[in-house]
Amino acid sequence: MRAGNRLSVLTVLAVVVLVASASAQDVYYYGTRPLAMGGSGAALADDNNAIQLNPAGIAFQDRYTIDLNYQRTERLRKYAWWKQKAWAEQEEGDLEVTNVDKVERFDIWHLSLLDAITSPYLKAGLSFTAEGFPGATFEDNRDYRIALAFAGTFADLVGVGFGGTYIKFDLSDLLTANAGVIIRPLKFVSIGLAVRDFVRTETRYHDWVTASVAGGVAVMLFERRLNLSA
Image: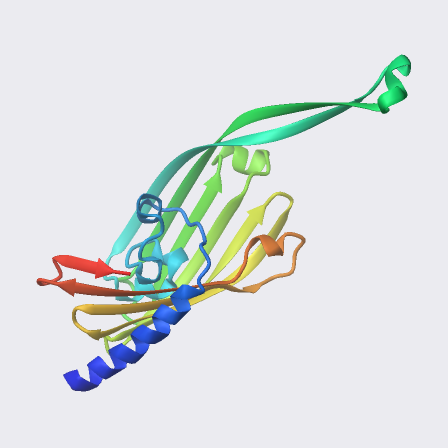
């Protein structure tokens, strides 16, 4: 493909991606890059975080990778306690309500594995994110998520990936599907588009996970020493 044609394709794709980005929903994912950069470069993820952010990102990898992250958060939860009032006090209502604010600590563990060497045609990644792992995760019925992704490349220009996620929260669970594409029309340009959770199993909490679209464009200058992305 000649450089002129590649630039034309780049212009069209950039417009499509920017339009998609405008309607994208913010979805929180675990990992050092999303945590430190607020999810920056979600559609252009080129490390283990691509397993969750854009499965196409693992298509351009050429190594085995193990990634372990830990996050500690504190949340304020409100509890209300009811008890029956004494008979002499029931003129204003039968129940006495006591409100209690409690700060609870949550430990989040995230592990991801990437195999981009065993098969030259198909790359695979697996990630596991859990709250209070290992004891509280299963003994106290805490939340956890397992994501699996597969990807391949075409002529070293296009990476296509598909994946699925199993999410367990509260007393329910659900399965979702993800897909993505990363195009490199020029050596120093990457364009990414990811569609997450576009298929969901019907459960009582399936509305908590909504479908989302993420797009991005990255330009790498000075022999890839400077990376500009949006």
